[in-house]
Length: 357
Figure 1 (spheres, one colour):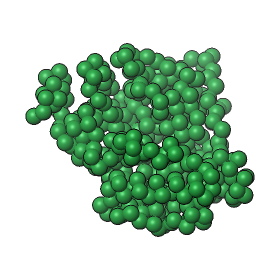
Figure 2 (cartoon, helix red, strand yellow; figure 1 turned 90 degrees about the horizontal axis):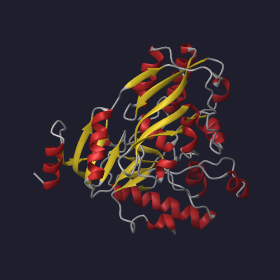
Figure 3 (cartoon, helix red, strand yellow; figure 1 turned 30 degrees about the vertical axis):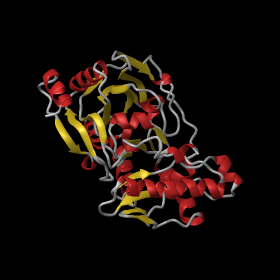
Figure 4 (spheres, rainbow, N blue to C red; figure 1 turned 180 degrees about the vertical axis):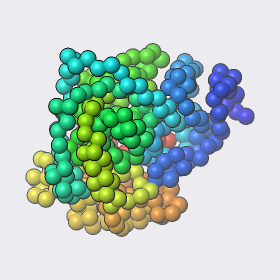
């Protein structure tokens, strides 16, 4: 047993720690080396204790949720890796006199989403803002798929737009995920975090720097514990219809991937290049002609060229080689610096230096 594991076991005897745990099974792309020490946080209090202990003892700490947009290096991750599986949910009292303005995000992605991914989206979108509102506090480790069904059983709607997105609540907040024409930030009132000093803080939505696939958590070292959402006592049958249609469309997306690798390009670049869509998948397929390209068992998907998939036993180096090729060729041929939608864990600065070139 390593000194780090012994230190953690002594301080937190109820937590089950594992050395050199393979992290590939904890990601949707099934790629990644081991964690030096790994554990699961089953409750928010357990997560809080782990985070505070790691911070106070200067132990390198990584929090994993669903692992759906994280590429882990083949060498793995040093320090403590915690998979957040806290799933508490509490329906709160709602003061109808309190009105919050949802954080609206400039939606450069909407054309590609509605026309390319979900052609009939415009026909099923509807507005729930006239429905009775309800506040719900939800733990960051709650999987979205579970959450949406739990809420619908309680007659609560609003998050149906995010069905079939493989994420936890915490990951959804970090990336301000979008579904159809809706962003997660549309529904968030506040977020409870542990800050860099180890103190608990409640942050209002207006302070979270929400944008297209981004939030303040991309640049801060705060750990999300839970969030309060402002949702609706809405039409459950309508919500279920959205889920059914969204699920049907999402079946077209490739498995064993990290989703779209890069953000869509800006409207300005789209206009400059006279492209029919801002989709990076269109660029990869029709301009770079890289659809189907392989590096080992990693492949630019034949089904959707914005995805890189693991067709067997792909390594992180395989995946990164394809990502790098797309990035460099787009920059060289189109003078566009793409923005990755995924996170990189365990890589050296030198290995990712091409992103700063």
